[in-house]
Length: 307
Image (cartoon, rainbow, N blue to C red; front, side, top):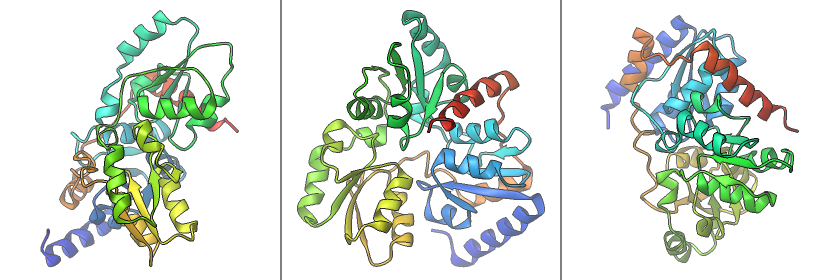
């Protein structure tokens, strides 16, 4: 933990430099609490990029992981996009490459490719349409039924979507290592300790964990459900960083992590010192080539056009 005086001085300098740079700070809900507290916007990755694109900020400081900063660069090519920790990556996103996807498409001619937003810009450029965890079922349901579907990269989200939509899909064998390690036994153990708690599960979890859910949702969906629910206790099956926003937005309610293992080291790698350094140096920058950006943008725009 930082000394209180040092922490306050860091925050003061960040806020001053943010104004000078005409910058906006974005934080994913999985980030450490102190990062969320200095952010202008806190939320899901694509939602953050879309909202930042609508502002007049010239600089985006994205406190998240690499694919998220890439999405911001795709949606805001005129802005400088910074990722305070250049090595903050996503193991799931790394489980599918553009080259491997092209090979899969060659083996399945005519396939429609749906990519989860948790993918690189290069992969998005190879796909027909993107989806988020919140709208994946809606996106897949909107597709023509006379062509096969390839879904990348998350097998757990893909299986959930297939069950909910009734569609047959060729599902990539990727996963989020954090969500995938959570077992049904982990959830049942916490449920035995808090029998009145409702179970909130992210669809990146294994099918047997999803089966135990009272509500399956994205991080934003979990926050909304918890705010609106009359229930006072919740078991939360997603990365522990969300607990900060849950406790902040839902005073008087109790939230229990489904497991102490639900911690993403990449999401916890950004510090206040790194945020300040990024604002001072305007580095590390995340850019996307014009060719990749144009194709990735079409993939995202097709998703946004789904009603």
